[in-house]
Image (cartoon, rainbow, N blue to C red; front, side, top):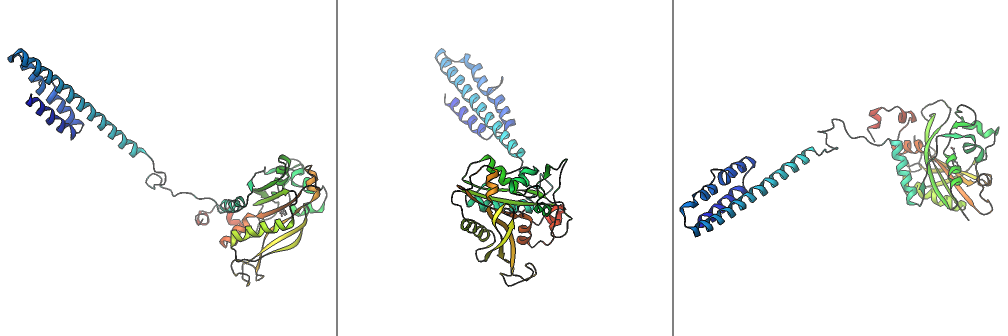
Amino acid sequence: MNNIECIINEATEKIKNADIVVLENLKVEYLGRNGILTQILKSLSQYSIEDKKRIGLEANKAKSIIENEIDKKKESLKKALLDEKVQKEKLDYSSSFYFPFSKGSFHPVIQTIQDISSVFKSLGFSVAEGPEIETDWYNFEALNIPESHPARDTQDTFYLDNVKNLLRTHTSSGQIRVMEKQKPPIKVIVPGRVYRNEASDASHSSTFHQIEGLVVDENVTFVDLKAVLSNFIHKFFGFELGVRFRPSHFQFTEPSAEVDMQCPFCKGNGCRVCKNSGWIETLGCGMVHPNVLKAVSYDPGKYTAYAFGIGVERITMFKHGIDDIRLFYENDLRFLKQF
Ligand code: PHE
């Protein structure tokens, strides 16, 4: 009996530290046809009936205990092996071991759109999108720019198959689409790509990006417009910079203004970037023209609105000191990798 207990203890200890090969050997050593416990059971005939019963019972119990221990250990070894395998196969996508090329990043224009959007989101704006291929109605007509109006000449439009389809020249078309779908109050920005049929140079490109803003509600005033746009410029470029509103003209806003901010490079003292004026033209804006509200069946007696348009490339160029707009579209990795 003591002997059998010793066998169990000894086996359990060995099993604890065994690997899969040792485990197989232990199985043979204790439970095999010539194993220790089998030997004991075979030798029972020499004992009295009572001892036979007792020793037989203990030996069989020991057999099943050891068998159980071996099985348990086998399971835990298998699991450990599997875990190790899973761990090894788990890919670390950021590791240069698996990917010999470095991680990508957002294009600087996209980064600016994201940054500007998050400032406006923090001011309660939502974000919408519109199509790049537009009809004459959304791009011009509904924005108070009737056919044959001279204002169309300034837009250098790319017309498509017929004069009714075109590549949008500004994101202002997004204003109309939002107002058509929603009822006031509206507080939205519409970022997107726009197209102009013009020769490219360091400051012009036939495609660029704008972010349109639109707020419609009862009692919206020019004061609200000034507050939100000044706040945007301060949050985006710095609170110390001065902001000024200059009278301007857009067909779809009345009154219209252009917003300048003090040059962030020279803080208004005059430098190369601001061409010594101390100010940088930042965006166009104004109170939405009553004709535009009528075009989407809003009552201009009830609702007022303001709108603004921000040139994304322009802002990105000022932010990073980039002096040629064409760099954004050449996909030169030496340029892109800096962002
Ligand atoms: N759509 C104008 C442009 O492309 C910008 C603008 C938007 C001006 C909204 C006023 C209001 O120049």
